[in-house]
Image (cartoon, rainbow, N blue to C red; front, side):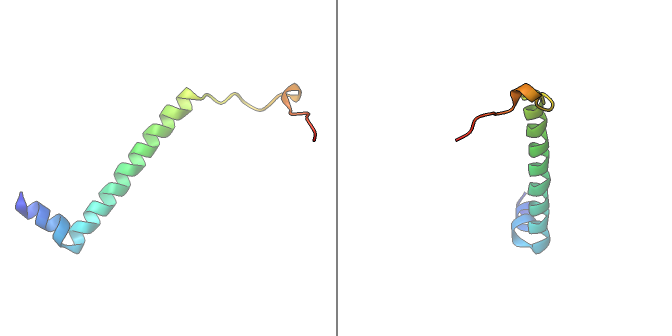
Amino acid sequence: MDEIFTFLFGTKAGFAVLFFAAVIITAIVAFLLERRTSKLYVDRGPKQGDEDDDWTL
């Protein structure tokens, strides 16, 4: 187990493995959260003509 930590935190290649693993994990989490959000807030399509904001200052 000590060899693994020495490789990951003590060498440039190990640091690269940690960096790319973090990037991949972040991308997976972002993808899953985006899917969950898109299911929660369904796209209602384009606005109809009567839904436009007609207010002025």
